[in-house]
Length: 212
Image (cartoon, rainbow, N blue to C red):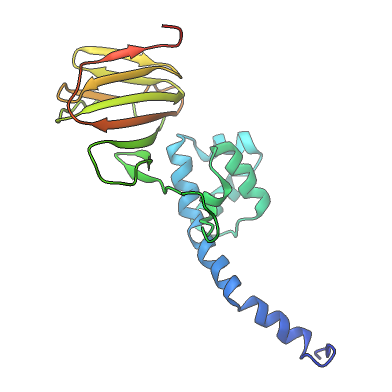
């Protein structure tokens, strides 16, 4: 039996209206994309389910069900994963951008790497943030017209440029002519994050390190 509420209908019908309103539909749509985002980010970080369990305390079975959509994510679980993956919570749940003046640039996957476009206007210069997974260790050099500048944010990046094979540390910068066969990837130790700016043909490699 439903309980009347001051002549404004019943608590049962009011609750049903709230659950079926626009807000609930918006939440449902946002949560639909969470499983694929969680798996994509974990793979980009080069982590196994067991490694995530070890670092967060969330069981492997729970993580697996989250990534396959068999379990509804809770705020507590998402906060733990957001902190481990170093990804804003809004990006994991696909929060709407209404009323938010910040520009949210959505990551994509390119050749196994997570790539976030930082430049929005077409032109000669294009900028990206790139997350290189741990397992990307096999050099596959290629050449094309242009000039590239990279800056290592975290982790260690292996750079193969022609006959040169070097490792860049956080804070290191490299510039090179992309007509020279080149490749960059992981050293196999941990994921790496870097900034990349691509433009017109330029100079050969110039490597700088802090204090140099």
